[in-house]
Structures are given as C-alpha cells and as structure tokens.
Length: 279
Ligand SMILES: [Zn+2]
Image (cartoon, rainbow, N blue to C red; front, side):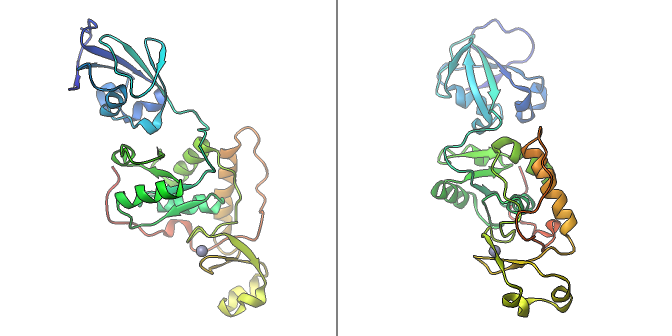
C-alpha cells in the first residue's frame, strides 16, 4: 500500500512528496531525518494514514497542506501532490482545562507535574486499554512515549512526551500546554489537593526531629499525607523554579512559595514500573 521510494527519480506518478517540520523529524526513520520523504501511493489511503505510516503520530501534527492548500487528515492525496506537515502549535490549545493522565513509565514526570500543581493522574500498573478509557472518561490528555498508544482511534486526546530525563519531559509538557502553575498545592503521591493543617492536628504523625524543627504543615485532602519543607526542599524548589522559567520564558518570576511546602518522598524515588519498556 505504502512504499518508500529511494533516490531522486520522482516523476510525480503514483507518488507523494512529504515535507515535515523539523520538530517532527525525530519520529521519522533514519533515512528520512532530513525531513523529506517520497512515498509510493495507492490513491486510496488517507493522508493521515500516510503520515502515521511514516512514524509520525497525528497528535503531533498541526496543519497539513497539499500543494499549498490546507487539508485534513482524511484527505485522499492525488498522485504527485506535495504535502507539507507542520508540528502542533505551542502552546497547544485544549478543549477544556489542562488535565493529564500519564503512561506507566512516566512516574518521575507525574511527581514533578503534581509538585507544580498540575492536575495529573498516574498509576504504575495500567494496561493500555485502561489508560485510554480513563483519559476519555475524565477528559485528560494522555501523555506517553508510546507511539502505538497515540494511534488508538478511540483516544480523545494524547501527546508524545519528548525527552529522556524527567526534567526535560517537564519542560516539554509545560511549553506545549502552558498549564497554569500552582506549586506546593498538590499531593505528589496521589494528586489530591493540599490544605494547611495545624501542627497540633498532625503532631502524633511526626517523628521527633520533624516535630522540633518545623512549624508549617499541609495535608492531602485525599490520602491524608502530611507535607512540610524538609531535607529535600532545596531540590524541589529548584524543580519549581525551572518549571516557572519554562512556563514563562520571557518573564521569569521569583520562585516564591504559594503555600506550605511539600517534601517527601524524594523525586527520584518513584517506583519503576516493570510492565513494558518504553517504545
Ligand atoms: Zn495524597
């Protein structure tokens, strides 16, 4: 159905020439990384199918043009057309408030998003079908590094997360969706909202050293976990400051705490899921 044509012998018959934005080239096969592909075309496949067959998820695609005319993914290209494929705009508008569901291998990113107050659902043991069902039911954007998952027709909205390290991934998500930040307002363990709590109410939960040292506490409304600015606080502040810079690159505000600080567990201590290697 779809066959790569090598070389420069394209005569426009039964072939399409596709040009990809630089931001999309990481998805292309090594031989296509220059951003131009010529493919044989059967005249019946949709443009969306052609683009995805080359490795580019449609969730990452902005506008499509055929010979300069804007078309949709359902467009059936004619022989010899030149297709231009642009990347999704940044920030990308969403149909509702920015809420996310993360794939099982993105636990470290989930903690960081919650740390800066972004509504982030995450479980380290969800199968693909369950991820799609939850994303659709709760109108959450599914974030993943699994291109196969993004090709699911049933998925209402998804995005590919760029970067190998969680810090890079956080910057990618913040620059892509520009969610409002509210650091120190969410439980990094369960995504629940934090509320200030009197020390006397949580006194019995604290170790003696913590009880002696700290006065300001917050507690998760959902799971009851208690937070205070503890030993890892400087590192978490650095994550928050980097997130603020990513969210507002031209106008970096001072990294001020909005509420009492979150602490344990340390960010790198997330559990590693074993279900599936990243694809
Ligand atoms: Zn919680």
